[in-house]
Amino acid sequence: MIILSALIIAFFVVPYENENGSYVDVRDFYQFFGNQAVIAIAALMVVGKSLEETGALRSLVLLMSSGWKRRPKSTMLITLVVAAFASAFLNNTPIVVMLLPVLVAAALRTHQSPTSMLMPMGLATIIGGMATTIGTSTNLMAVDIAADLGLNITGLFHFTLPVLIAGTVGILFLWLVAPKLLPERTPPMSDTSPRVFNAMFRVTEGSYPVGKTLSEVLAQTGNRMSVNRIQRGRGLFGEGLYITKLPSVNMQEGDLLYVNDRPEQLKEFEEALGLTLFTDNGTDEDIPVDEAHPLTAEGQALAEVVVTRGSLLHQRTLNSVKFVLRYNLAPLAIHRAKTDDVDTDGDIGDVRLRSGDVILVQGTEDSIRDLRQGGAMLVLSGKVSLPDSKLASRALLISGVVIGTAAFGLLPIVVSAVVGVSLLVLTRTMSWNSVVAALSAPVILIIVTSLALSLALLKTGGAEYIAQAFVASTQSLPTPFILSGLMLVMAILTNLVSNAAAAGIGTPIALSVAQQLGAPAEPFFLAVLFGANMSFATPMGYQTNLLVMSAGGYKFSDFLRVGIPLTLIMWVVFSILLPLMYGVT
Image (cartoon, rainbow, N blue to C red; front, top):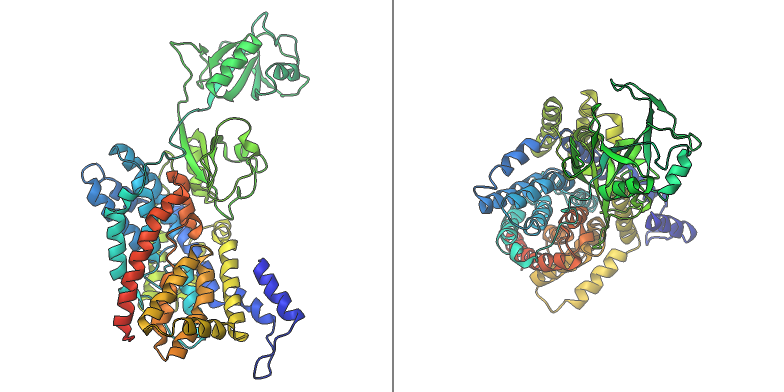
């Protein structure tokens, strides 16, 4: 947003006059919010979200998971291929989210480290996204820029063949070599303790709370105990009166204090107040907590929730969004993105969350299912029911229509995607709230700003100047080497900035370089496109890298171990293929 604002202010304050005497109008930068590539990207976000929200691909995921016990090695290859294939048509994020818990569970069953599985799967989706014009938002944006410059890339599978060849080599590397390069890491949420238990204290004769106010009782525990409700006068059949939790209410003998907390905390409260701890098992039977009757958390499940950009939790705290009240789930621990810290002590509700953080939560299966189906959070694991199969089949059918009509050239992708969103709403497969939640403001702003930067480079002659400097510095090299060098520059740039920004800057430069060399424009455009998609070597290179990093407990260096060799492999294969396929000599 700052870059977009800077462009608008700069060209307003200091108007730029072209060689033909016309000025760069600041209104040109606003037009990209209505650009057809941005509209298509936003619509495809919604279509992809429908598959995630309805669990349309979960049956395929579960079918894949059945082969892990018998043939783990071959099943891993199938997983990589399916992940890459699906990513050629769908957003990578829901695919990664669905596969993460499956791979973690498979690793536990086969006594393998999840580390060897999660990163290869995530990088495979990036490879698959290169293959079609709708595989990533970067592809759509770059194709649109190229079209404005006179290069017409037609069809969904226009550049699929080189990606298929290079991608095959890349997938084989991820299958056979990458697991051996990764050191074993402990997933941050692998420890399922401490859990939160429902319990109750009975106020007995002679205990501290008798005659004291609720505020005095809580002060005796250092104000660490949280009372959910107070029941007074419970009879033989469980009837009783629930009284308001006012700080001034006086405790009486026989009162029941219902609490939720960790075992060690509950035992501390029991000792501090001189009370007897009972298990709240949902019945009228009071069972004292002892060695024969320990605390139980029946009907409870654990789940991992990932904080993503644009989600309710991003840059906020659990307390500020009233997470416990809103979702009826108890947060147990937070794994901070890009660090090894797992915080289970203190008030984690006051921790400001950021993209990539993972929260370990506990609650009923219904609460976890509601959280997953609500679409507001990415839930990596948890024992939950499958979504409505009718909605899943509708989402699959509509997605198939969107992709099919674009693939066979019946409709432009911007038309078929918008029609698909309309069908999702009209058939009530998605609510309006879900449609709005599917739109990622950061992604849209990145695309708009990248298009604006591309326009600025073109209108001011910046693209031509950079192209001349690049050609001058490489003039002694054969044209195929210049093509290869351009791709390598983009591959390095995309791991430092967003891939959309790399493609937005690189596309006009590539076409200008081709023009100055008298070479065909398409291979130079593809060199930029493929290079900008090689976001393998850093966690911030692509949004799914952050998800994988958090779920697998990876370090920054782990992405370098696998990402750099994979980038070099793909770069070498593309450097051989593009000159051969397009006659660049």
